[in-house]
Image (cartoon, rainbow, N blue to C red; front, side, top):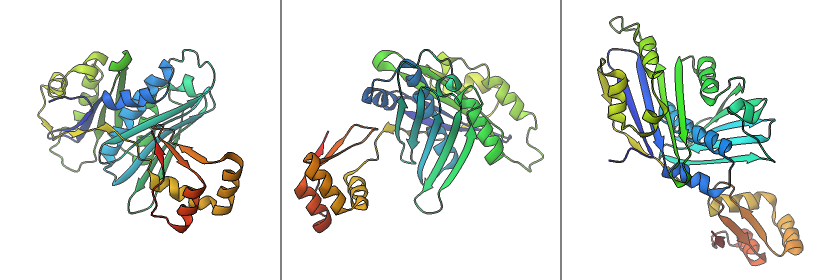
Length: 294
C-alpha cells in the first residue's frame, strides 16, 4: 500500500505520548501545479499542507481547519486548509523577487500565524500566535503551549524534485494523565528519539519501519491510516451566494460595463463566468446552472 498522501496515527503504550506522521505527494504536487511559485514558497507551502493535515487529525474537527501565515515581507500570505474527509488545498501571495530566505520568518517578516476552526455545528474558533519562531514547527509548538497547554513537537521536511515533490510531517504530543503507572520519562525519551529522524527517512521510509526505527524499544500501537487528496471546496453554489450578497443592481452595472462577470478560484483556478441572462436567473430562477470554465 502506498504511503504517500496518507496520514498515520500512533500511540506509545503505557505512556502519555501520541503522534501522527503524514506524507504528501500528489496532493502537494497539485497545489504546486496551480501557480508558478518560487522554490522557497513551495517549501513553506509543503510544510503548511503537512501541518494542516496533522492538526485536523489531532483536533478531530467536523468542519474546516485553516492555517494562515500573514506577514509584512515579500510573501504576505501562506494558507492551507483541510477537512475530516482528507481534502487539502493551499495558496500563497507574494510580490517581486523574494530572494533565498532560509526559513518562514525570513520569508514572511513580522506577522502572525492564525489557526481557524470552522465546525459544521458550533462556534468558529481562532487562535493566533506571532511569527517569532524561525520555522512553522516552532510557531505551532508555541500555539499548542499557549492555547492548548499540551506539550507538542513537530518536524517537517520537503523535497522539491520537479513533478515528484514530497512534503512530510511528524508530530508528538504529551497527553495529560492521572495514571501513576505510566512512564513519566516517556515524553522526553520520545522527543529525543524523534530528534534523530532524518529528512530522507521522513520523506521515504514506510511508516511502520519509520516508527520501528525510532521506537523499537517501546510498544507502539499503530492505528488505521487515512488517505489525503487535493480537492478544492469552491463551488457554483458558493459563488452564487457571494454574488447574491452583492445585489442585482450592482451586478447589472458591472455587466453593463464589462459584458460579463468572472469569478476565479485562487486555489484551483476554476473560472466561473456569468452573463446578463445568468444574473437574471440568479435572482429570479436560482436553480438555473451557471457556466463553469476550467
